[in-house]
Length: 306
Image (cartoon, rainbow, N blue to C red):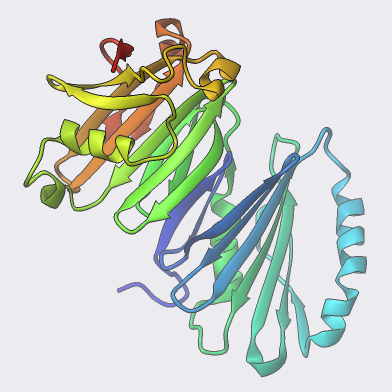
């Protein structure tokens, strides 16, 4: 049986940074700014973590960063009934625990990620009723923190677990009950990935290709094309109203759609991805995995008139 001082954990990975947190914490929101990523996690009751990492042009002197933080934290320390510096963290980390009114606790930690120009700041919230040790949770987070700059980069939240090349950047997302979507950009190319739960219910009345066509044609993400089943594949057909493409396609010069759907039998899920690009020459850019399924695209992009 797991003790309270060693909580069960899960992995969170977002925008090139990954770390472990208690298993009940999950994504609540995120924001991208210039070279800055902000992430918020919550459990069933409240916000638990607010994180921010900054990709700097050069590594700052960590002592100067620490002095600047202590100056900014003076007001926080005045409002706290107790302040404690947390020790035993990995090299380069600075962390403090504040006891706030109503026995709330606030743990704050920051560090330069090793061998990178990334500065990370974490603020963890604990209520008086929480059994987890703030110091232990922050230690788990700090020990597990990783920066992914090359190769395949993980994106892990909720029950989604994706790996893509670092050149793919998140553009938008949608988290609906039973159907999640992440959309990425790679230059002017776009990649959309869906994951659906309860695959057995969806496939009780249709094939996975028919399900994919239903998802794509009901989406407002694709203008000027409609999707049809072609044997055991899905293809895009050009609308006669826009024979030369939609203005979005023309502006990016991306008229080809490579589509694939897969059934994850073990976990009862469906995966669908659509790569909108300039042709087969772009396909080597796309590799990785969605859950246990390797990303692979075969066959024609399908650009028939409709």
